[in-house]
Length: 158
Figure 1 (tube, one colour):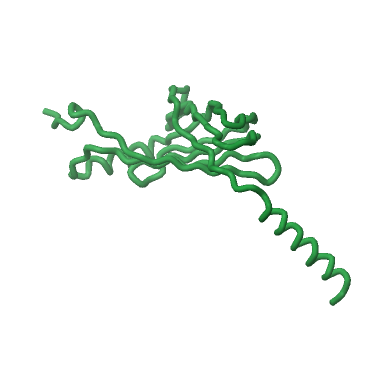
Figure 2 (cartoon, one colour):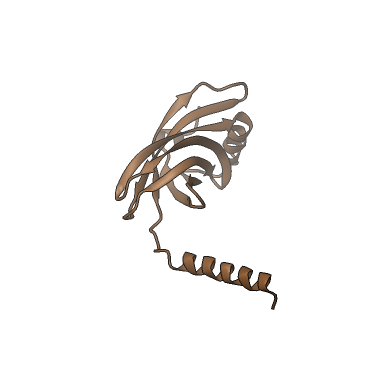
């Protein structure tokens, strides 16, 4: 085997061994801490979503950018990105503000889906996103659940 291939093989094995030796980390826990309206343009609705990020690990997590996708009833509803940077302290938490956009077309599609004749008493949501860390680290997160509509919202319009 030529020397160049041997050196490349050794470098690949060292890299893989270094990754395998890294301690396993618990995933960051992300929840929605609040939502505020923002000024939209044209056929869009904008909101500022505040994400509470909790770090259950013994090392701080440095981030440089965040992206979020919010699905409602299985369809993409809102998306957003922020280039903010910061640190989630070890065994600590921080709040990150992400502006998200909802197009009127997506909103109409969601409303039409709800008005398809089937009774809807719960709305299912799923939030996916990532915090881009420094170097090659990325923390992906996912939160899902549903919430009940108030009984007054379910009453037929007369």
